[in-house]
Structure formats: structure tokens, C-alpha cells
Length: 384
Ligand SMILES: Cc1cc2nc3c(=O)[nH]c(=O)nc-3n(C[C@H](O)[C@H](O)[C@H](O)COP(=O)(O)O)c2cc1C
Image 1 (tube, rainbow, N blue to C red):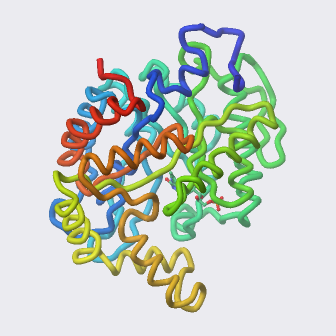
Image 2 (cartoon, rainbow, N blue to C red):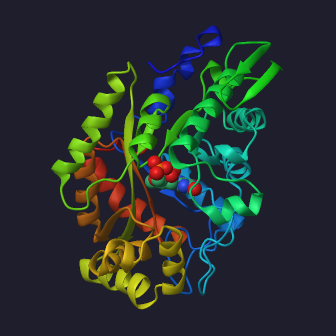
């Protein structure tokens, strides 16, 4: 089992229960990106997601009642511009999570934290506070950052890519020490030096928050395998066999280090009563009404241009980024969506976090139509 803080362990709150998100469902389902305006749909349609608190709270309560396992926010400090200033209005994720945890009973809520922008001891205490409020339901998504603009805004210089993960290693080690049973300790890392640390209280129930990361590079993936309980990765868009291989290889690499790792994917769902309606709505939002100037801004920040990747790949990526900054595309009627989700579960994925254009309007239909199908297919238990 992953590093359980055994001195004060309460068997009711074992790390494996945190990893299972306190449900017996084989496939965990989460909502991704609701703390940001427009969520993950780079669209101009008027019903696009507000990202405001009122809508987030209403969404979390519906998700909680329906047995959805988690909500995962995006840590974004500056919008991408374009006609909608895509993701320009965002709720800070730890305070957002704490508010949602106080208003729900079962939902796991993650905070997404840029390690270089938060002092580890302040962050560790914020996480403990959120975890106490949620009675063991806070989760941590560590990100190292990639968006130069955001770092400039803070007056912080980004490290070179792999060194970001060296720093993050120090940072998570310091956070874990602050969560652990040690009373007074010094921390002498490569980058972080702390003296006579006192950090009380500890996370809820003698364990620690679930930790996830979504590094895509070899260095980012290795960081996740060394440190995390959940690894969010890119599932194959064309082959379930390929997805199964990706999942198995991450789990095998973790096991070779004596660790258990759950593998998750992210996606975008458009679910309507018929396949035709779903395809039409998808087309309306992400092709006819995409915020193409924002898409081009995102591609620019990622250095994706015809000159760097070639004309054809550029066109493919441009389209891909409009529908939710990447991730699996799931467009269909409830049978089709349920089938795709069940296949992901069979490929070994422990769960998936996805977005809708308007989460609040679309989630109830998903819960009414897709969840019962997943129950009948055996990948989710009957709702209590
Ligand atoms: C599910 C998921 C959530 C992510 N959340 C954020 C985020 O909120 N903020 C951020 O700056 N990067 C985020 N990222 C980016 C990753 O943390 C990571 O930096 C990216 O996948 C590139 O991998 P690399 O750092 O190994 O190069 C996310 C990626 C995924 C797949």
C-alpha cells in the first residue's frame, strides 16, 4: 500500500479507500474543469459554462447525489484571450474545493496546485484544512506549470522542463513530511530548506489526501509513478488495445517500485437522445461556434504552428484543441456513451474525468440515462 501514515491510522480511512474514492464502482467518474469560465469547451455558444460559484455549487450537489466520484479543477491563473477570454475567469482551486467539500457528502474534490507558486508548508496546511472539512475527501493534483505568461504574472522564472519535476519532488516530499507524524523536523532538500517545522493538524483519519499528476513527458510520467496514487494520461483515440497497453505499462512500472497506481483518462462528452442530435450539437459548439482566436492563442503558447508541426498536423490539433483542449471525444446517444465508457473500464482505466459544454444542463441527462446503463453493464454499482 502507498505510504500510509501508520502512527495514527484509523482503519476506516485506509489509503486504499481513498484510492477507491469510497465507492465500489470499477469505473470512477469525475467532472473536469468546472472552476473555469467555458470549462474545457473553447466555444462562443451563449450557453457556455459560466464557471461561477453558484453554478459550481449546484453542479457539485447534483454530482454528489448522483454518486459521481470526483471533481477535478484546472489551475489556471490567466485566460487565453480570444473573443470569450477563454478560461479568463477562474475560481482558485483549494478554496473552491473547500467550499464544495463543506457542501457535499461523498464527492472527492481535488485542488490543482502549481508547486513552484505555493510555499509547501502553506500549501500542506491548506490541504489539511480542506481534508478536515471534507472528512478525508480532498485530493491533490500537482502541476509544475507550462504557461510562461502565468509565471511572468507572478514574477517567477520557470525552470527548464525536467528541473520543474526535480523541484516538485522536493515540494511533495516537504508536503508529505508536514502531513506525517513528525513533530519538529528540518527539511533539507535540493531546492527547499525548512527549519524546525511544526505542522498540525494532520490530514483526516490518519492517512493523507489522494495525490494525482498528469505529466505527459517521460519525466512527468516518472514523477507520477514515484509519487502519485492516480496518473491521468492520454488514452488512445483510436484503439482500446493501445489504451490497455498504456495503462498496463504505467501500472507495471509503479509495481516495480512497490507502488500501486490507478490510471485515469480525460475526455469531453456530448450526450443527446439520438446520435444525430449529439453530432449536430457537437458540430454547432466546437466547429461552427468555436472561439478560434482563443484556440489559436492556446496553440501559440504551446508552440504548435504549421512551421513546427506541419500543415496537416496543425489543422488536426487546431480542431482537437477546440473541443476541450484534447482528451477523448465521446459524442453519441446514451447507448454509445455507455459503451465507450465500459470499454475504457475494460481497458484497465480506473476512471475518467470529463467535461460538458454546460455541465449543469447536461449532467442530469447523463446521470439519468448513462449511469443506469453502466450499472447494467457491471462497471458501476446500483446507486444507493
Ligand atoms: C487531467 C489533466 C489536468 C491538468 N491540469 C493542469 C492544470 O490545471 N494546470 C496546468 O498548468 N497544467 C495542467 N495539466 C498539464 C499537466 O500537468 C502536464 O504539465 C502536461 O500534461 C505536460 O506534461 P509534462 O509536464 O510532463 O511535459 C493537466 C493535464 C491533464 C491531462
